[in-house]
Length: 400
Image (cartoon, rainbow, N blue to C red; front, top):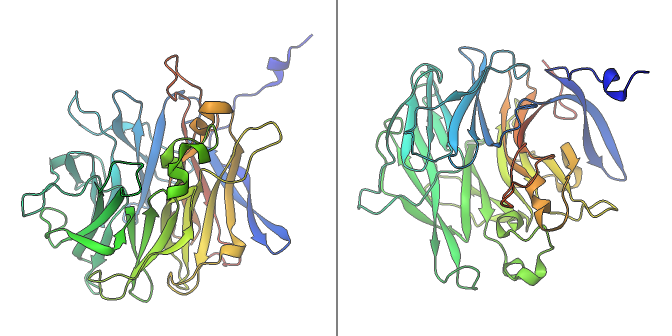
């Protein structure tokens, strides 16, 4: 008699059909995308994916962190729009250096850039080899605000395509000690005119008081649209107001949008979209000028009947260059029920999203997907923490 295991085939690598759901009044509108966990079977801690598309090679490059203690930056490439991926390659950080990589950016012509805690890394050959310089302090001697978590802005000459300016953001902790009411973050912006080698003095944007991570995107009308992760509100700073398993303050922040109409010199007040539990936004601009933003849902009202949390990767559309967003027709790219409840429930929550538009105008969205992670013996969150990717079409948008 055969055992159940005899009927289980090895999991097929590559894309599998995947349901994409858009909320539409009193129903879901379903479409089919493609999904896979590209780290399936690694049984490692992998997180914080950033992806870029390099048109000269028709290649996608992904930057992630691998493992804890030490945590190391690694890259992978796909030459078929996300279906298959290379083996991970370590960025040549020092042996004793423990640092993930963030804010991956593509400058064109094979030039790639990202940062870790201490260094800015450059590649001139599409991410094959890397060199580094220290992250520049402010010209005043003051330390730069902190990690540049979100990708910066790349401006190009409209005729030659040459990079003319970069902008990046960071933030500092200010006021009282957290969680007292006087604690707040302050986000900064600065610019580079030599492809990231040197930077202007940092500016504390007044409208970004109470804002930490900021991602910058150029809209079709030339406005700069900023995704702004907001500080945790005072209600949730009180631990008694946080559900067991969602007690980590980092999970409970929301986000909003700030817009500049003068190339980043001044900014609008932040328009809050979600007051808690959703963050890590990533935007792409579609050919018709619509902005599509992916983000993750870490804390919501979604718990199943057995008390396990439900997590989502979602997307919103703006049809007016970021001024307003279609909150009533959110797109659900992925959803899973965490495998832990109680104090460790948050271990299976998502980590970051990163989206790029592919040549056929489909969108590739990568995200941390810790659906099956388990605690380590010391109680810390352990493997497997995976990377999920979805290739999908925006509902209502025709494909090329």
